[in-house]
Length: 173
Image 1 (tube, helix red, strand yellow):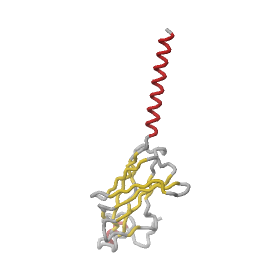
Image 2 (cartoon, one colour):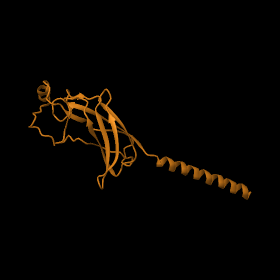
Image 3 (cartoon, helix red, strand yellow):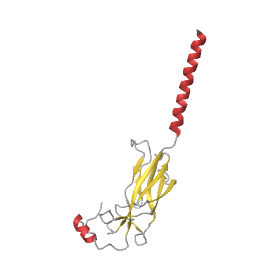
Image 4 (cartoon, one colour):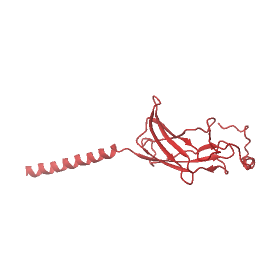
C-alpha cells in the first residue's frame, strides 16, 4: 500500500513539475507586436491629414526603441509602406522600460520629401510595446507620418475653407 501511495505522489509531483516548466517556457517567449501605421504626403502643407492628402506607397520607415534612463538605442526594425501607404512592422520583445516610435526614413515621392520638425506633428510617432500596461491586443496603431509637398496643390484653399482653418492663424497646441 505504501508503495502505491509513493508511486501516486511521485506521478503527481512529476506532473506539477512538468506543468510549471511549460508555464515558465511560455512566459519566457518574447512577445511579437504588429506596429501598423500610414504615411501621407501633406499636399496642403497643413501639417495634418486632409481629404486631399495622398497616401505614399513605397515610403520607408523605421521603428526605434530607446532606453528611458540613458537614451541609448535598444531596438530597431525597418518597414516599407504597401500599395495603400500602410506599413506593418513586426516588433519582437518586451520594451517596458523604453520609449519607442516610428520615424520616416525615405519618401517615395520626389516632390514630397520635407519632414515636419515643429509643432504638434513630430518626426517620431510614439508607440507602446509592452504587455505590462493592460493592452491585450498585440497590434499597435501609430499616428500617421507626414511628408510636406514642395508646393501646396490648387485645392488647398477650398479644403482650408471647409475646415475653417486659416494657415498661420490657427496654431496647433
